Each structure stands twice: as C-alpha cells, then as structure tokens.
Image (cartoon, rainbow, N blue to C red):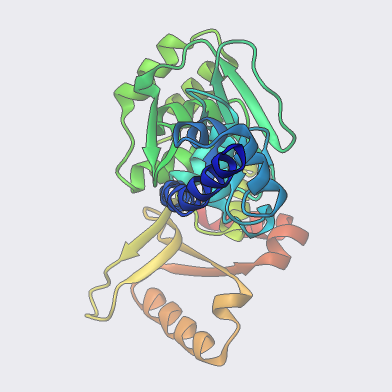
Length: 320
C-alpha cells in the first residue's frame, strides 16, 4: 500500500505540473517575462519545485528571488527593468534615469538600472543602482507599461542628483512637450525633499530655464546650443516653424533669432548628405534670403573643431 501511495502522489504531481506551468506563463506574460519567488510561492509551487525548474532550464535566475522564462540575454529592456523592481523587494520601483527612459523623458545607455527602495537599508545586487528613500510615498509611484516606477514629477526631481544641469533642462523640456509636466507636483517634491541636493538643482532649472524652449533633437544640436551659451549669445528659439509669405511650405528652423532674422541649420550627414537634400536645402536658403532672413549652415567639424570662427560669425549677426 505504501508503494501504491507513492505512485498516486507521483500521478497527482504530474497532473499538477501543466496547471502550474500555465499559471507561471500567464503571470510572466503580464510582467515582461519575469516572476518573483514570492509570486511563485503564492501560485502554490514549493521551494523544491522552483529549484527543479531552475535546474532543468524552465526558469532562469536573474537576481536572487527573481526568475525569467528565458535566459537573461534574451530579455528585452522592459523585462530587465521589471526584474530589477522585483529584486528591490516590496514597494521598490525603478527610478532616476531608468524611470526617465520608461517615461520617455530621456534616453539612457546605462547597463545599470536605477531602483528606489523604502528605508535606509536594503538589498544590494550587481547591476543595480539602489537608491534609498524615507520620503517616497504611494503618491510618488505609478505603473508604466506594467512596470512599477516613480511618477514623472518624482523622476524629474531625482534626476537632479544624477545628471548635469543641461540634461535636466532637456528632461523638463521633454515632459512639457509630452504634456505630462505638473509644476505643482514638482513644487511638492522640492518642499518635501528640501534637504536633498536635487532640490537646489531643480530650483535653478526652474528659475533660469524657460521650460519647453530648447527641445534639441540630436547631439549636434545640443553641442550648438552649448556653444551659444559659452559665447554668451541671446538664447535662440529652438525647432521653430517659419511661415513665409511666398505661399511655400513652412520651414522648420533648428535655431532662430527672430528679431535679428538669423536662422541656423545644424547639418548632420545622416539627413543632409544626399544630393536631393542638398538641392532642398539650397532652395530653403534662397527662400529665407528673399524674405530678409540670414540662413547659416554649420556642422560637426566647425562646431567641435573650429568653434571660434562660428562664434565670431554668430556674434557679428546676432549682436550687431
């Protein structure tokens, strides 16, 4: 009878496996392919069953207590971000640069993932930048594409401690363009976190920068704007449409000094290196000239290797 009991138990377990696997797959599908150890236990899997699945390759360990259905190298970035949030423990969220990328405020090429956890102590994991907070509340967190992360306001505030001032301006500009910038929520973050270095940095951006005025689209545009600031030129309008009275299509100016009627185009090889583009750009400059604008073209070599001559040209046109 004992032998019959063991056979019966084995039969029951074999019938239970497909149900468990289906439940795991369903959970992982909602979480970009990853699951937490506590979640597996809640599904009814024992520690031995989880270990067995990891041993035979049906689960892949990403962090302690976090598994995926595919090897880590096959996880998309959303899966890696979700795994990082699960690794942080209850209440943990992706934050800072990672949350900025998730909220489409800025790009990041960092391999490390930013995670904020509650309290002053917590776990450490290779590949994660753990930020500890005693002021993070439920109102400071949200879900984007199913991934727990900081809100836009909290993300912008946190960025003040990990990126430079100009990149912070760009993040604020992007939030304004996406129409997700809540200034009251930003002010609330500054008030509640007044002793953090980010508070002063965010204040400086809000005081000195007109939010939404400099939404550069490429590194060459960003380098040109930095050159203008070094040269102490008036800040140009960025990415502005000009409607000329000739009835032709509107012209989008990379940089515009409207009063001085100066238009600057920062030419990158990707978009201006073809014969067709050259003909289009020439016609564009002709139209601007006819209507008393001064079109200027510049590129990588001049901006990075001969900036003094470009600065002299701009001063003569903009400051005269």
